[in-house]
Length: 142
Image 1 (cartoon, one colour):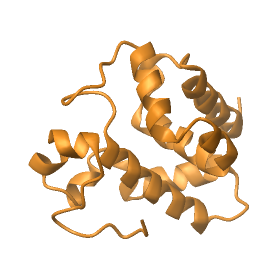
Image 2 (cartoon, one colour; image 1 turned 90 degrees about the vertical axis):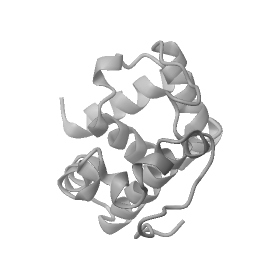
Image 3 (spheres, rainbow, N blue to C red; image 1 turned 60 degrees about the horizontal axis):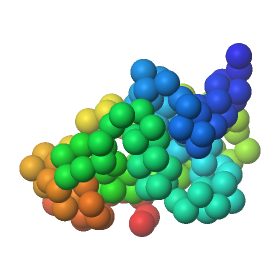
Image 4 (cartoon, rainbow, N blue to C red; image 1 turned 180 degrees about the horizontal axis):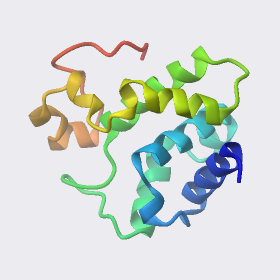
């Protein structure tokens, strides 16, 4: 399977809530994000990323609550970062873009802690709604 086909499979698995939970890795999160950003009509038709992730979580037995499941601040920040990387590689295959993204700072799953203190980021408010970083501004436009 090519990287492009695998990325599309991950995105379609998220959309259909059929991607095995064991495959919903840090890399898969960004693979799906890049595919959806490259297909904005699909993302718009589905109401954005929040309903997709919440539905996927529910389908895989992950509770969306004040302490688990969907996280608005991390999702929005991740989409901003993924969109910036996507823009840096116009016309390149998504597999190549995903590799570049994973080799950069976003490849470390603890990357948000460079911008938010752990207490703020893991708090219920940041999980429910966008919370501005308290340590450093994000390098990507909002």
